[in-house]
Amino acid sequence: MKQEPTVFIIDDDEAVRDSLKMLMNSVGQTVEAFSSPAEFLEVYDENRPGCIVLDIRMPGMSGLELQSKLNEMHCILPIIFITGHGDVPMAVQAIKDGAMNFIQKPFRDQELLDLINDALKLDAQQRRELLEHKEILRRLSTLTDREREVLHHVVEGKANKVIAADINLSQRTVEIHRSRVMEKMGTKSLAHLVRQVMQVKDHLEGEFNFKV
Image (tube, rainbow, N blue to C red; front, side, top):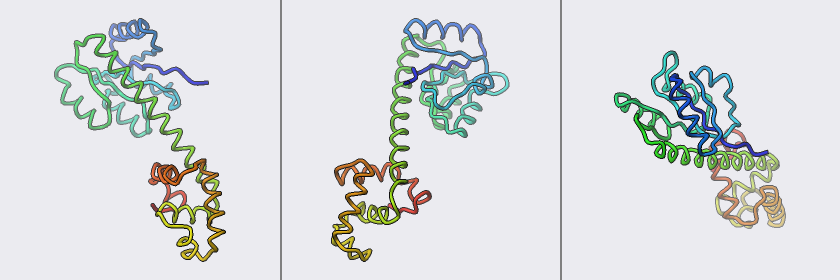
C-alpha cells in the first residue's frame, strides 16, 4: 500500500510546532512534529515519504548537525530550514550540503506551503527513480556472465557480427544472447537498454565487473 507523504516538523519551540501543525492540518497534509532532532531520529524510517521542516538553531543537536547525520544515513527526505535573519549564512551553507531550501522568519503561510509542495514532489520523484534504479540492478543480477559480456559490447554500439568476432562466438549465438539480455532487462529497444545501463553505471564496475 502506498504511504501518504508526511511533513516532519522539527523545532524546539512548542508554539511554532503547534502553529505549523495547524497549518498542515488546514490543507489536509499529514504532519508529525518533534521537539528535537534526537526525538525525530528515534522514529525515523527511510521508507516513509515526505519532507522535513527543520529549525536551524536548537539546543543540543542543531538543525545543521541533524542534516549532517541524515546525510551520513543517506536520507533522501528534502529539508526546508527555518531561519532567523542572523542564520542566513548558515542556511546558505545548508543548501550547499544538500538542503532543498530555507525560509526566513517571519514567513507567510503560503510561502511555506509552496516550498513544502515542491519538496514533496521532489521526494516522490526521487523515490520513483530509486525504485527504478533498484529494479535495473535486480534485472542485471539475473544475467549470466556471457550475457553481461554481450551486453557490454552491445552498449558500446557494436554490431552482432563484430561482437561475435571479438568474443569468438558465432553470430547466431550472439543474437540469442542479445535477445535474452533484452528479455531479462525488460526492454525492446537498444536505446532503452543503453539508457538503463547508464542509469546505474556507477554500480556496474563494483557489483558486476562491468565498465561503461
